[in-house]
Image 1: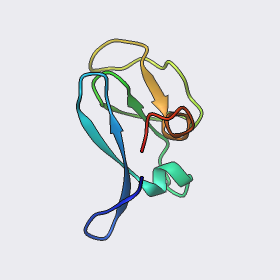
Image 2: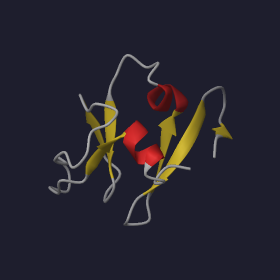
Image 3: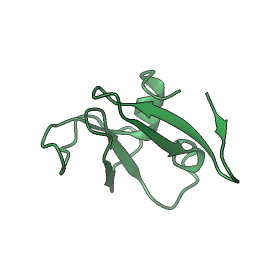
Image 4: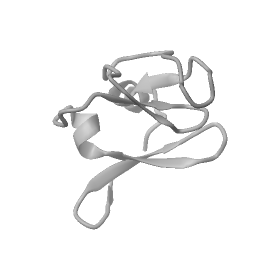
Length: 79
């Protein structure tokens, strides 16, 4: 579910550790110039991650738990 921030709208990812991460709408829609993925465990961002990426390595927590933003949305992890 989309929330309005100051001027940027974003979706929310809740990690397995209970952290929340704001994911910009431009990342979800693919209108950003960056491909960013998010770790399901710690919430860290990973650059150069295709929108449909699954199980990429997380540089922060070490797991293969980074997914592309659109993949997270389709799997129901982003609201």
